[in-house]
Length: 411
Image 1: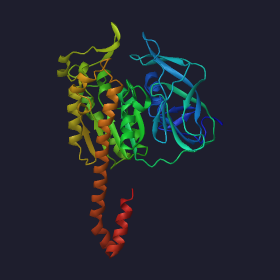
Image 2: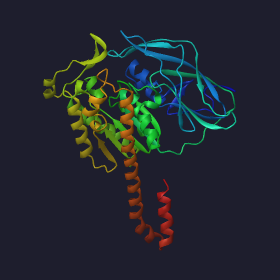
Image 3: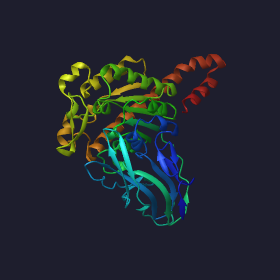
Image 4: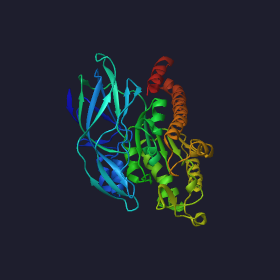
């Protein structure tokens, strides 16, 4: 069976919309507000985006057009594999063949695209060819991927409904997946699977800069839990001073709260990064060794209001503490990846964790999410119990009030 994509039998989950077959993670109205080509490129890279369908097929072939990033003077990035889940179990994926290239100049934020041909990804699902199973194909987090067609050796059916709570996460390149070996190995994907959550990944490499359009995009979509990993890109771009950073964080949270007044929100400060722990940015690839990053800042500049990660963590903790918001919490990024992790699993490019560190961070954050959801359920239960006497008074008896409380607890 061959389907031209998009097709209603194949759900594209984790994307806000499709431009033809190209998934976008932010809504279409954002496009005129994107500041440069760099932001547009990472927004269209499908971190967390996956195809969902049901089939008895033993193999499928996905036809796509791919763009891989080249940051001068380095060659294009190596092919990234597709992630594959069959009935929730991870199965070995494969990478696309030929690709086009997008040349990125990150300082100026410019890109030049050199498109490639349609190429195919062969995915072996196993099975007996008779039993219909749920299949998820996770697109490579760092490759711009335009969907063309899906071939299978059996019928393709619409996917099973998703019942899991929806987790919307925003962050930088580490949240996007830089350093992970597969799309299922990015720390948000690891955390989402371990905690049983439905992930929307709004991690944007080099572009977690408290942009108002991201806050509005989060405000306007459904979410059961929201996490915001903030700070590292602000330092790397040397984009703000402390005076502007604190109000910008408050403004971002204010916008999110307009659409989610009681949804659990977590502000996560940066992971350890010795390069800019006490030294401000800006950071860039080191011309002497373009496989690692360097900073052009100096520790003395912190006194003038420039931002280091140490300053960022302190500021974020104060912002969260200052807001009268019982559903807002702060998580110190050092609890996810600190000095012990640096010693055991150092960042090879001095900025991004590698694959084992991604899995460790994801496992640790899954525990944070589980605790958060449990606390949220307890708060909902307490609110319902607090409402019980008032409902009893309104209806004049105990039994009808109990029915009302149960109804309130259903969500």
